Length: 204
Image 1 (cartoon, rainbow, N blue to C red):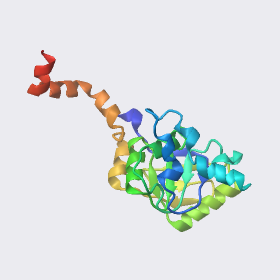
Image 2: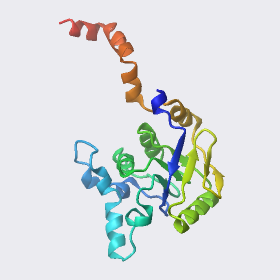
Image 3: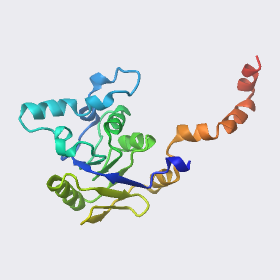
Image 4: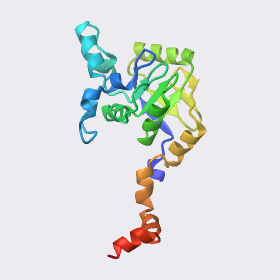
């Protein structure tokens, strides 16, 4: 699983202020009728973005300086609300590869981890410093290192953390359960052949 190992994420960032941003704001429920996740990036924060545009203050996801950002900076309890995997899928397809926040909904954290999008925590003071830096210098590059548990820019470094079990799956590449099955599919076939109700069915 070496090809799926995630140890560092580097790129520009997008600051999104506010506590308790729920999954219905991230990806409204009316878009969940699709049979695949394709195109979900078009609907990320669509209602918030429309409201911000109407108010004459573009949402961060619509501000040109933050286009192409790969690291999302958030506050407390991000991804709360309904249990839907579509929210992290939409963010990942928009281009977000990692999220740094004060805290995350447990289910959102799990859904994000399953698609290889680490959600790490940092202190409020460090997040405020990161957000301020990014807002003043939108093209500043962040380097998130899961091995050392740090996030740094040219002039700033802070500690970040995530549960050891999640950290280990990213570093080893085993977060990708589907890829793991495909890589060792001969073992899946062998196990299936030993099961009488599968082996018997396969043999007619």
